[in-house]
Image: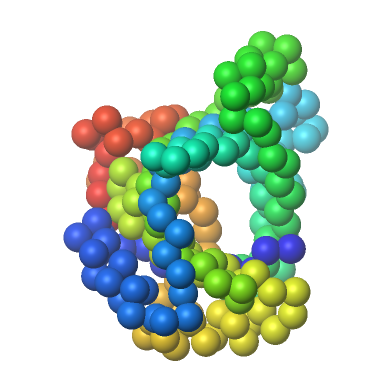
Length: 208
């Protein structure tokens, strides 16, 4: 189970958020990483990951920095009670993949298993961590996301309360859905076509 809360901001707020996190002595900055995530759907119409009944995301992510790279296959799903409390409680399972096998893994997913490629997105992730929490500042093509995730096996809400207070954040200002929901909202609001691939090179993407 994953316990987290998320906020979205205009790109101009990036430095302010980073600077504020740097003032919290309990946190350690672990670096800035480039990530590309591709999301797939089942070929079985009765097992539609994007249906309201399942509401899950099957994702393959490659992460790169100057020093190393890693790859992850993950399954993330909103539960029926995900948004009932103050924080998001979501199902998440992850499998590590050798990054050298990334291209071959994509080939098998698309050409052998023939899963349906739904969408992809790029972002830069800045991580602040300790034994209690992982706080990520994600730079998307359309804006900034601040995500606070408890890393403990108990007292998750107390941990999130602590860092919410340190950052002067309010639960009622959080965004309970995922990045693709926020992106779709922006496109509809600005009467812009929703793209399957949300990439930095695309200058038509609307911004918060």
